[in-house]
Image 1 (cartoon, rainbow, N blue to C red):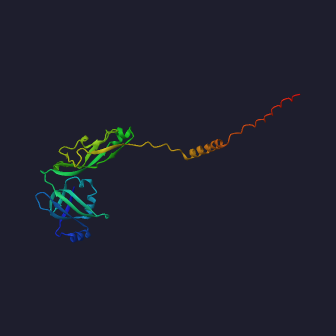
Image 2: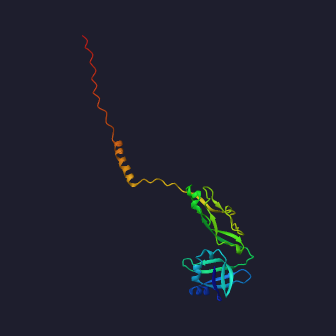
Image 3: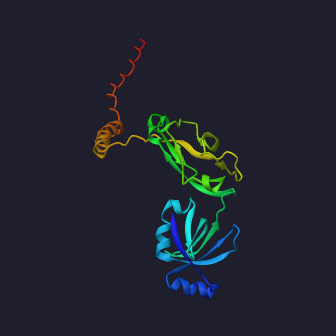
Amino acid sequence: MKFVAFERAKQGTGASRRLRITGRTPGIVYGGKGEATMIELDHNALWHAIKKEAFHASILEMELAGKDQKVLLRDLQMHPFKQQILHIDFQRVEATTRMTVKVPLHYSGEEESPAVKTENCMANHVVTELTVSCFPADIPEFIAIDLSGLKKGSPLHVKDITLPKGVKFVAKGHVNPVLVSITANLVEAEVVPVADEKDAKAGAKPAAKAAAKPADKPADKPAAKPAAKPAAKK
């Protein structure tokens, strides 16, 4: 991917502010055998360039003062709320020097995996880019990862994938971080339709009333006859 840059003579906060007003973005190129060079770029062209993934993770061809230089994007400063690039940094690339870069991960095949297709699970992409070390010629534009073998209870780690030739993973705190985790989907409770719910309530009311009705009183027993008086003695 190629872009055009121009040398910048004036430096400082005020000069950078005036440069942005004219539709230019200040930047710098450093590293390699040359000295750091102040540059400026057309903001509109740069804005469209940063939308492409290759601009962030591949060797770029920068035309400066009629000469081409191989550079790598190192830093991009954006305005907090405006769609504006405030500053941009590039590093010169030397073929014999290993570089540490961030490479995006492209996942595919998860819909065909046993975890998603038959085991009612969901694959979560924990990591979307990987920090790697390699020579400039070996920097991949992206790393493709096939998820068709995912199974329930078996998350995917860095050591489970095969990196491109000449590319090594750079551990930053975690030697073998999780790239993709597996989460079981919750079983949804059965929802009773509104009509059925009303019918159920209507049928329950008569039964409730019947249960609340007091039981019939037992029939009155006949009054007991008085005991016969003993016969009078003569």
